[in-house]
Image (tube, rainbow, N blue to C red):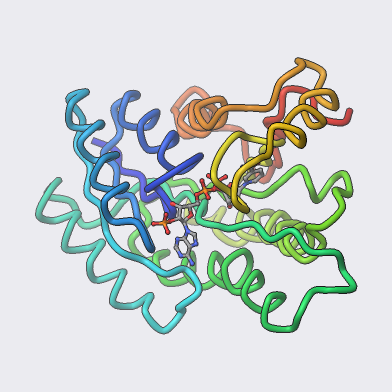
Amino acid sequence: MKIVVITGGSRGIGAATAIACAASGLGVILTYNANPGRAAEVVRAIEAGGGRAVALPLDVADVAGFPAFRAEVAAALAATWGRAAFDALVNNAGYGLYRPIEAVTEAEFDGLYRVHLKGPFFLTQTLLPLIAADGHIVNIVSATSRVATAGVAPYAGFKAGLEVLTRYQAEEFGPRRIRANAIAPGPIRTELGGGLSAEFEAVLAGQTALGRVGEPDDVGGVVAGLLSEQNRWINAQTIEVGGGYRI
Ligand SMILES: NC(=O)c1ccc[n+]([C@@H]2O[C@H](COP(=O)([O-])OP(=O)(O)OC[C@H]3O[C@@H](n4cnc5c(N)ncnc54)[C@H](OP(=O)(O)O)[C@@H]3O)[C@@H](O)[C@H]2O)c1
């Protein structure tokens, strides 16, 4: 059985991705940060559908904790699937902050940097020895790097950095037969940044060709599909999943 590690799998897009991957036959290791109960619910939902999943704690901002996390992943792989490696890493964990450039503090800037760029860089580096040949890295970036959306400048900047990093991962990991792609969601109805107000959601729906904002499983299914054997030749790409947001 192929196995995927998904960061931030307790809620939103990560939870939907975990459920979609399990439905397509993958074993799932999902991580949570502040919400172990929500992660346990996702594990239960996967098990109810006949899948296998394990939830592990991880703070993506804490690079010093990554070696211990790698050891926990290795232990979970051995105990649950009898394997020493996994097949796909989805760097999904994240949070939003709406703040005009003039008001962003250095601490806010650094916090977003740690979770959205530094964390995925070093987590991938740390877990690389556990990623099997023909493996895959998927980085969740954002349509806000393509079109400016007032109030998310540092976030969008770091997501753009992660998008570039994706191509470098594809280049450097290609010889190990590991591909790397980025998925850039448009506006999705999750709890990110405190969730979308009804007013803001109406504006975003009006800016989307298909006339609504996305749901988490609009993205989760795409990630699961990208990991499938049929899509094995897609590499080093950013794929926007936004229903035609601000085209
Ligand atoms: N929603 C959108 O419109 C949208 C658009 C473009 C891109 N994205 C990106 O999609 C990804 C998922 O976002 P979402 O909308 O699903 O958000 P969400 O519903 O708020 O879920 C965020 C997830 O990330 C985890 N997380 C947050 N901070 C973390 C940290 N420091 N360490 C480890 N895990 C952490 C949370 O874990 P706990 O709950 O356990 O704390 C939760 O599982 C993010 O990278 C986001 O930037 C979202």
